[in-house]
Image (spheres, rainbow, N blue to C red):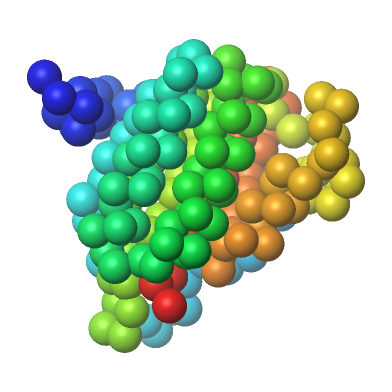
Length: 176
């Protein structure tokens, strides 16, 4: 079984897990930026889910993201930006939640094409989402460019987190 077959084989189970984990997050405290214009008709297709259970899975997520955006025609520079964002989200899952998943999908509208990246975990959650989004904020002793850096790389960004239940981050990056 090759890498993408393994990803697709786990997709249904991962979706069920995500739905279970985040169905109770409707009342969570969160900061949101809109991810879609209401009047714009869009489709999302070709979803691949990469489980993040050990540090080596970060590399798998990076590779899957690289293959997807290259197939969509992203430039080398844009590809590097997408891969960096995916790497940071997968690293956060590994570091803070220990396990979770990265979902990668193609997003298309009548005028453009892009990638949707969804990072989900059932970890401890983020105590102060607003603070975590500030440049320089770190709970691990790093430089604190993680989530604020990812938000800066993304064209659209949404985060929701609930203490004791986990975190969900969804971003879109459009082909330029």
